[in-house]
Length: 226
Image (cartoon, rainbow, N blue to C red; front, side, top):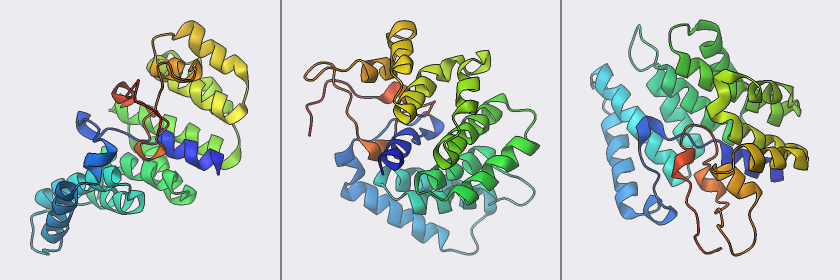
């Protein structure tokens, strides 16, 4: 259970650079209303493919923010293949991340492998796919080796703090926390590793899942504990 909660904590990807909603706003009537509006639009069978794709993407983002990871995964996967002859790899990996957050390992793995095996001209997609694959291997099989390799890979330098935090949480080895505090002292992950009660508190809100790069810049500090 502890591992599952931390995996939820990891798997928030801020699509399109959109700012994270607070828990309060995510549960608001406005959010629910927009979700229902998008579902109604998607129920129209004659909608153009491009419009359907865009509505699925928006619905996936909103359902993820509302805490409905299963519904978000379905929306993202539909967006990935909404337009004939085209595949939205960003949507595909967003869907895979949501599937991971609910323990649908095999379905998530299938989507990640599609990206790893076929994408060649988008480094950002390959980056995200490799990272998700490493997380999947660590959480599903307890194999942290790939994450350790990514932490030493210059291509993943920007994600190193998140990787070390994950390794620390999974293994319990304080050497990873020490590495965070020493080498990445200004990172949100280092703040989490060095946290002391009542000071610079990082809110451990699994529903917002913020430690998967990108999106980590949206972490909120100094809120009172619940």
